Image (tube, rainbow, N blue to C red; front, side, top):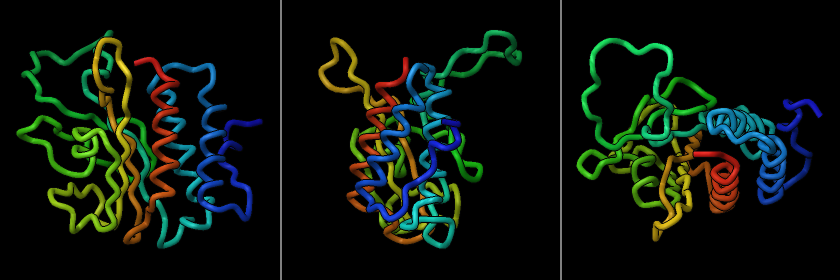
Length: 203
């Protein structure tokens, strides 16, 4: 099957079936590949295009207008061929923009206790999904796109040997053009996808 066909959606399905289908398609798409940049790129594309083909969201005023990942800056590879001259000052804990689909987005999100704010930072620091019905009412919301009305962010959690709890290594972030665009069914589906993505990559 061509890779692009992974985003085809059966007609007449409900949300639970939709997310189960996306999860299954993504598992096939990620099989045999462990590079996190490659896998997160395909994951964001599959989720985004599948949602556009699903009537509950589509490409109208209920559209999911952004889908992508922010990843702990420490996991990004160091330059191997060329680096601009001068030393970089020490950086506080932060997430850097990873693979995504949608309009240009914020390049980094601070997650150190003194600087953390917004939905992505809270999901990362609290290690739990944050579902926001109205982003304008959310304290500290960082507006990357003024058209976004609602948002859901799932942490990427990795089990690390000798650590008592899972380590947060990034987040999966989705924005929607309508208020209360996401519900608990989306939360369950996206949390399962976040687990699949983490398990399918080498970090």
